[in-house]
Image 1 (cartoon, rainbow, N blue to C red):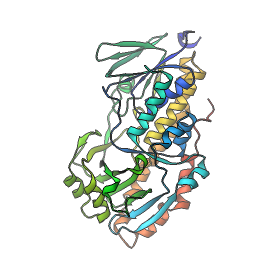
Image 2: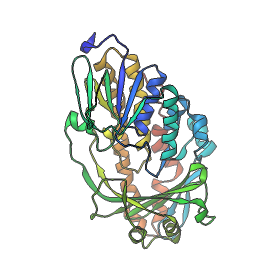
Image 3: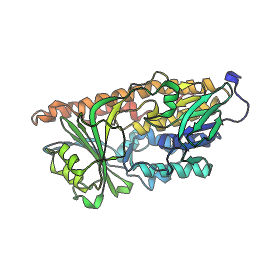
Image 4: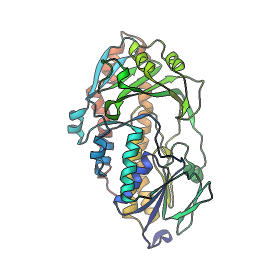
Length: 404
């Protein structure tokens, strides 16, 4: 057998208990593969922020049996719209709801990240109650011909057939395999916050996603948690903040100042945020390889992407399904299993990283400062026919049907 693999049933250690790691755990357990998930935090939770799951992501989540659980926490928006940063002029961008579900087979949904995480935790623990261990910070990974080994800060060591590093943009598993690497600052700072829907005027408290386009900034807001909250995310070109963390508190005054000339509706949402958080947008180039022997990576650990395509979490979900399928099929052939996973995912994830970067250029187009030119820019780059041409490859992809 290749790589000195044991004939014993495989066991997979997943480092990281976020959306990607738990999706991988669920996909593996459903295929009868034993899993242990190790999360460094003492509490299993996601930051208070929204996440959009396009049809290519809900297709995977539904295949894992989560349709009913998601229905209790999600929003299925009717549409996405575009608004001009200063005038508030509005254009219909593309239809979602039943239109999107009919076109792609499953809907586009909007969720609080914590709600999606809870759905995944419950599904994993239903199959294996003790699958998730908290307070375990990975410090090193290694491997031999017959097993992989994970070491933790508390001295705990675990052996397994495979290791999956689902530990995010600051991945310790990636650093052990390939070195820490260096992130490049994009010149952009992002803000996030949540607003109880009842704080907003009626014309803003709608079940649609809205993108505000401006020459040096971008604002996105959409409903989450059954429509009880509005998720706010904004990005502004700044060079004075380079901390890559989702948990640094800012002030509403600083956030409002970053968008000081923007439409009053943007400021109505900002006013409703209790605590805004800010982080620097950093990029790392796509990796040619993210697998070594029995150890691999998924999601932001190997292909972090800018938030201009709404696909960061979805790429981790797709990765999770494919790596589970490969490990299940080639359980006794470690190198084949993880190389196959990498080969399937490399080109697609690299394309998503590239397209997200291109979307940044369109979102911050200088034409958007010129009110006479903005309609032409929107018609050229953002209207529905052009969007379908650009996006069908993304949403129509079926990770559950790829050839393994």
